[in-house]
Image (cartoon, rainbow, N blue to C red; front, side):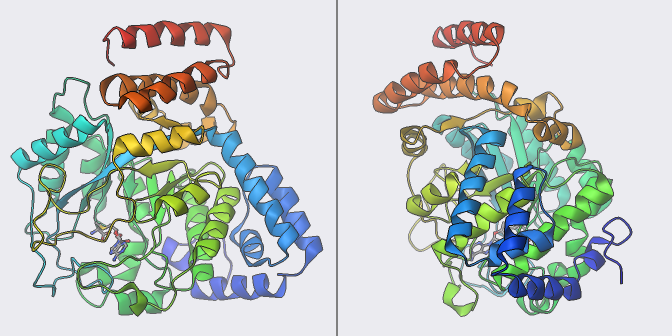
Length: 470
Ligand code: SAM
């Protein structure tokens, strides 16, 4: 069988046989210094690696080479994303779900979580609470339930969110993480103006997938695996991949993820916009130790580094499932977007959930406020960015990728990040956060390469200081 990503469907291309062969190849070459050096040299060209090459690096257990891999990941991260970290928050619309996913507390048989679905009025309250913290980018989350959460409900919710007026500006980008659906529905989501369509594969191991998703529409592995192709056919430019680490062997998932990225690039001319790296967490009736494939923080860091160098132009997302310490470790290895001050319960931003009403999807490890997260990032000299300019200016899909691949995205992202940070500092930050933020902005102005752009940014910062908002 040939492994041409162009001629095969995603589900055929990401085949068990090829992943098994890749794992065997990676295992056989884990001490092969000459090959590892060759792959690291190729990675230095910043054009990415194949799933086989990247799998050898993931398997490599030569300490000195691993240090080189980490160093390269850090450098690639800096070259493509600078020191900016994009901020977002998840918004849980509904936890009604008819699926039977065994790792998720929203599964149909769970009778003791409170089932909730936000009304449009409640969405306004939730979004206002998020805007009052300073958020500008949201990721919508919902269970799969065609009766309670039909596509019309999701579309209406998006419309409501974009129409909310707030004294400090509107929500500018709504990403959507809902179950696999039809080309027609994806077209509707595109027309509603969504940013990225995110769907986690959960696992690329078909047999395990079937056991982990015993009932409901999500149990159809092929339909789930082909979702991004349908999304792109429906006109969605930016798609976000991910697997839920802990369910299956991480090396298997890693190869599957990269093959999925190769497939999208070959067939649609554009790879994934983002890759998320969630790990299974404790939740209402879910015990993560029930899954055999949990990974420790060291392996997690290696995974992030290897994804970074394998797909340099794909953003990487880490959520508040991870602790402050873990997030700190992987930020410089490749993460470009993080959530902050997240609530994973339905309605949790405007009203804290009563003790006896557990509607959370999973326990959050990083419970800090957005101000604390922003402060912490700036202490490490990162620029928290609330920018959504790419999306507004149509720099999505292949246009975004070509800018990113030539390293040009940095020329516009850096000034935009500084200006949106300035807005955050003026409108939301505590005095301490504002102080270090102002210092950071001053020290970062010199990193704007073109003098004329620098002058424009200085003018714009002064306008923001005087109350003008985008
Ligand atoms: N219902 C949609 C679907 O099926 O894709 C939306 C997904 S859900 C709101 C978002 C993601 O949370 C899931 O794709 C899954 O990877 C993750 N998730 C579910 N249970 C989890 C748990 N116990 N710990 C960590 N993440 C979990």
